[in-house]
Amino acid sequence: MTQEPTETITVREATQADVPTLGRFGALLVSLHHGWDPHRFIDATPRTSTEYAGFFERLLGRDGVTILVAVDGLEVLGYVYMASEGYNYMALRGPAAVIQDLFVAPDRRRRGIGKSLLLAARNEASRQGQSQLTLSTAFKNEAAQRLFASLGFRPTMIEMTQDLSP
Image (tube, rainbow, N blue to C red; front, side, top):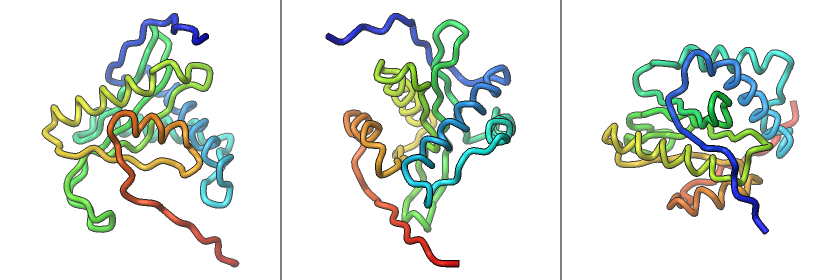
């Protein structure tokens, strides 16, 4: 039996007051990826939360950047960070909205929060006149891949890494 979520989720633009939580979530995202593949992804350090917070602080209000948070009352439960990009010849892609990060607090997952964030990002990309929304996902993040597929994302690229001896 699946338990219904008890919170009332709202998605809104991130504010300066959200920055410390965004930094903490960013550090958790770094650690999560490092756990999947420590040779490919950097590990969090004691400074990662502060550095990630500073990164988001510099992005707030920047043209072409959207940072949305899912909240229950005053509690931030997750975020999505999306950037509008022009032609990207390295990715062989035309202009698009690109989801850079999606994160939901570990104790709040599987309650539709990630889906709400993605739908809000998609709506914002459409409002901005974008014709494509793209994202990348860790190969081992199968739960996220199922979510993305359920919302109409299709696989288009696979990154491959080879570790080299120093």
